[in-house]
Image (cartoon, rainbow, N blue to C red; front, side):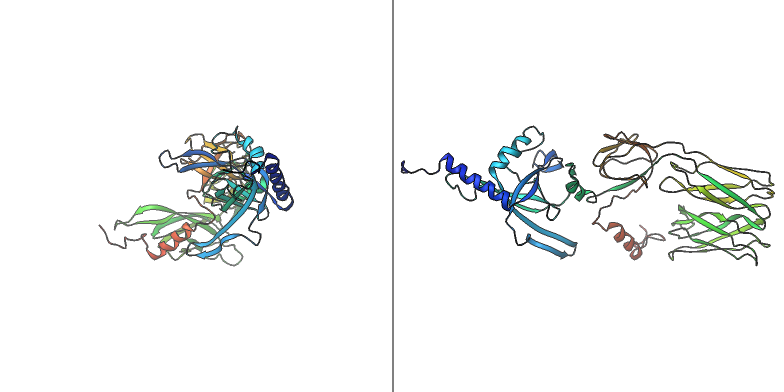
Length: 458
């Protein structure tokens, strides 16, 4: 039986030790942020966390035990690339946690075990601008001095992001996750303005380019080469496009030349120029075409204002007196502007410069998306979380995608109420560490399925 005349720890003695601990932490510690984990969904059988969220952060003083540097294995070069294996051990006051952080967590739903720091919560270490995950909480060290414990020792590992939602409202914390995880890029409609262009007419210019043989085996659009104009003239220029999914007589699918449009009709030709096609990547051959020339043809169409808010090529009207009317088509950029105007038929017999009118964009986009807000596709119902919004390029980067977005649907922000139409989307989700696309491209050069099955026909 203990001697009743000797105290094993009075309230005043315990309070004195706790006060000394608190004072030492404030004097020699570092102000870190404690970030509790919210458990949004979890596996009901093995309690595996499916979806987490971090949207609160509380500053608290902590003593860094690893004063000579990070613990752990450090930075390793592995077959999977460079990996950081840094650990961090810190000490926080038990009283400060129980009287400051725990009461704040009582009114927050989806948290667990608020009575002490818990494994799975995060620590923001400002000196290294790094996020650590608590892996173990030692709550009995030192071991019951005067029958009480006064600190929590947190053993932490560098946090590995797995598409959790992090939105604490503290920029130095949240910006650590902007470029993390799998993301998809959506190009949306910007402010809507109508494009304008100017036009010229020339003599001895190329009127049309007609394909006589589409060729086969192309992986990308080949370069179009037109023979030179006579001295004093200007060489014509053209661009090709390819079509996929065509089957030849041997039952082999390949890409072929679909069309050739003029970017400049040239002038001064007395004989129709010859056309040749040059592969840009060493794949594909056999494409052939011929040309027609004439006087009073459209020479070049210059975009004077690319406009904004275009999703598809608008209707373009060329009005003027001619023998044959000219026809053009617009190339719309990913940002929704008119990038260039190509000539599909330069017309014939213009004696005066015709007028050119470009149709207006059909839709108007508005609003500014907010970091970490939920967006929804108006038709598909697909949801995602905003990672980054670039007002200049109208590119929206999103993560945590559920479903598949549909082109031309509206992307609506849940908090900002932004609503813009989807022009293009990157069908591949990417992250800052994966190299999947490059690996796939290199593999295609090793095993080529474009002409035949290398493993034989079934």
